[in-house]
Length: 317
Image (tube, rainbow, N blue to C red; front, side):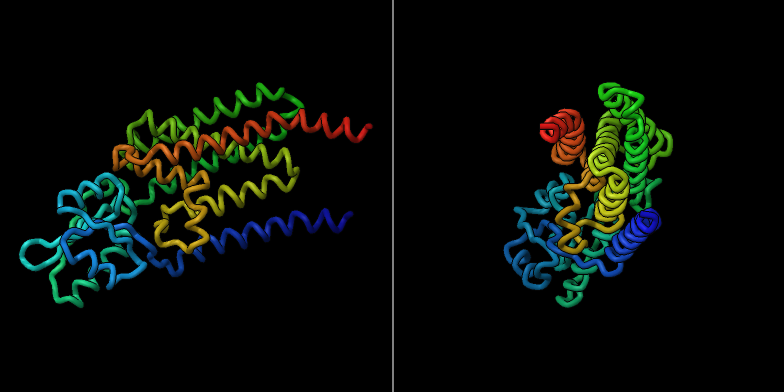
């Protein structure tokens, strides 16, 4: 028994540090582009780009430069490539999707243009906010709100003997809304780093905080002492590392890409970017993802007393 008391916290700490180091450093040490969507105009240019760049990009033919630009500004693609009328190429990018992604696209198309002997002109059509020149504000905002929700949920685990379930739910919901409001006001109007409309941003961040809080409390309630470390791994480690903010989702390994948009931080980063730079063009799916995390966790927490009574009655009989 004494050996277990010594080993369990040490092993949990080692697992957390190994996972954190592996995720944050491992995912960034050799990012490779995969199916980055770009709109390409012309009759034969899309075919040539596909043949030259292969699976690194997903070529989406566009009727003309204006259609390609609309796809870019609608966040359907991350770049638009067309001829400039003088034998050269014009690459329009959206810096708002992240420096790693736009740099990868620029390098790929630049290499193609060099090999084809064509001049390449690159223009950023959707630049980042002035106070977010590195494009990391969304990542830090999502990380901070996730952390706050995690702390809220982990503290609520110990309130079972003090507050009834309804009051604990009210606490989690009310505090999540407050977390979202404080974070949105600081990142937006106060610091000017996240140019999203305040109310939709508050709503999105409140959903993120609620998803983190209810998930943390769920895991702590069902798994006991191991639950909080599991929440740390799911939300703060894997979730934030694969969010697509520090390294673009299109540059992540296959396994990381698969979970990126499904975890709360990844969904939140996509929502923040869409609200800030693309008029919320694809906000629905990230918002639904966050709401499902909070709602399903809350439902399972609400069912816990009934499950416990059923198990107790079955044991007694």
